[in-house]
Length: 189
Image (cartoon, rainbow, N blue to C red; front, side, top):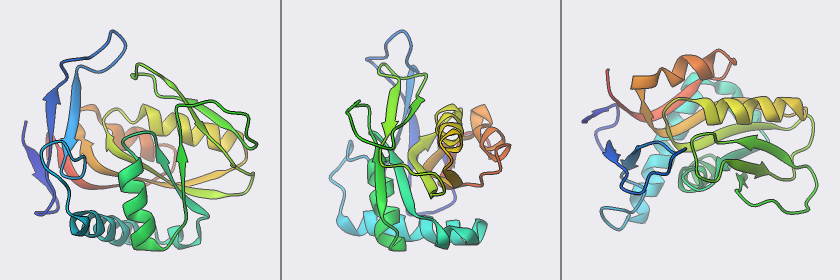
């Protein structure tokens, strides 16, 4: 499947997973920042972060007042760092490791072999930009947004490098009042 590029300098594609478990998706979105096809030059990370930040400011200007960028383990780490560096916002990461730290917010990544994910140090009233590398169904970001709201925190927007449009994730995420910003879209334009 070919990417429908919004940004000529960024490419993503859907590939078949050879190790997909019974509860995981049979496909994976691969992209220019995942380091699988080639080593990633730092300038590519910087440019992707700047592009994401510029688009995010256009779609959701209120993001300048958020407390942090919140990236998901493991694919969301790289784009969260890129967005943090471009925006000057601090970042936090949600991990698939349960430890005894305060302010824990638990949510589920249903299609994953290890579905339990934990964000730590979350306080009521804090606001976040949610970041993952790819969005397919939107369920993981919806689960995170709902868990944050249940804890009294405020998700403000969702950001990804690649959006797989075949599953209408955008409408699922936007139903929660969160704009979805992506660098590229895969599937139908």
